[in-house]
Amino acid sequence: MSRPSFYALQPGGVRDYWTLLHPPYTLWHLSFVALGACVVDTLEPRYLVMALVAFFLAVGIAAHALDELHGRPLRTQIPRSVLLALAALGLIGALVMGVYGASIVSWWGLVFIAIGGFLVPAYNLEWFDGRFHTDLWFAVMWGGFPALAGGFAQTGRIDVPIVLVSVGCGYVAAAQRRLSTPVRSIRRRATAVTGEITYEDGTRVPIDTAAMTLAPEGALRLLWIAMVLLAAGLVITRWP
Image 1 (tube, rainbow, N blue to C red):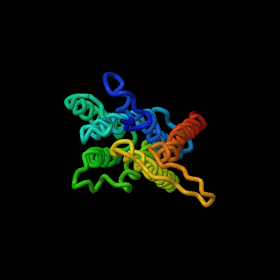
Image 2 (cartoon, rainbow, N blue to C red):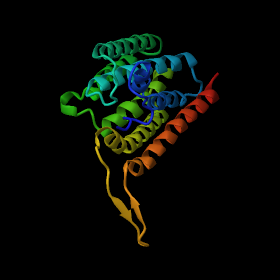
Image 3 (tube, rainbow, N blue to C red):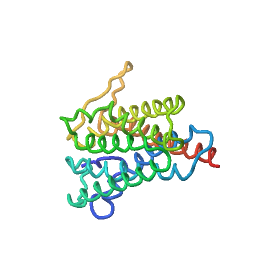
Image 4 (tube, rainbow, N blue to C red):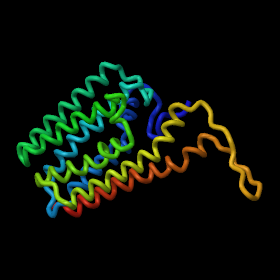
């Protein structure tokens, strides 16, 4: 049986927690927070760190724990009780960090906390018959929203540049979703991949799991690194 994702380790023990964190994708989505924060003229490092911690707790831990509770897509052996505890602690920690940040920057930040607190379980547990578990909501929740929140956390305002960067991050997340969906389907649900491609010169190339996943997964491996490096470079540039 193939691994459920390219970063997944063999099931069992501490390895399951690495797999649960989705390290490449978690870092990718945290880079959106940083990109949003870098729209301002002068970066406030403390606010950026708080936003990153809040999103790591909510997305990196809570969202992924809830996702694993819902059907075990990563095939980990983490007990259900531990997954529930991780989800609860992640959401509570993000809530506390968010409220503290709102008390410093702007109480309008509570709106972001409410939206994020709803979307995390709504998306990952597929509430309302999965209406929030769609490509559109993935782009919003995992791309646009983190960038918008990262920018807002810096100044307590939302202006045109922050909106444009957030929309751009949403489109990047949408592209990620387009690439990862067929790969996940093959890795996690397919029992066999067969067929061939016949070219004009008569050459025949077999279609197998590797052929179907190589290009999209290769792009994902490159893109998460590119986004993290881009965000890191901008943060360093804006660092006071």
